[in-house]
Length: 148
Image 1: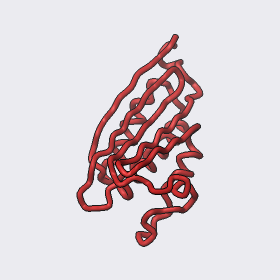
Image 2: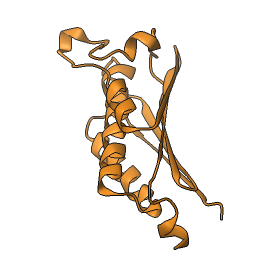
Image 3: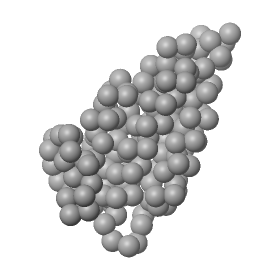
Image 4: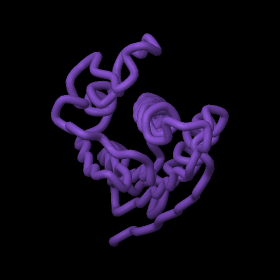
């Protein structure tokens, strides 16, 4: 049996919305009956990606939107977090541990290594019109909650 579902939400790139995004994705993923560790991994990765939108995408006081899309296909969750901000000039450099576009703010990096350690795959596409981070993770218990 093939299972498919998705949700998409848009919210302002404000730090208070980072927790909202984590809870939304975790709640949506419950359909696949993930373990506590899998949910924790997903929430951590989402937190890093949304925080990048808040801190790096919109450097002025005017904050734009973050679009969060979560898709379930059989036993795999795919999460795409998109902003319409300034983009990342050098994605390869940005993916290095401890790299930040705001060194004066004493940031510890952009979190891509964290995302990569908790998810099965992380893809980053960026240009001067914004950035999309797509992360996937296979859920070990798969469809047992849906078809079981």
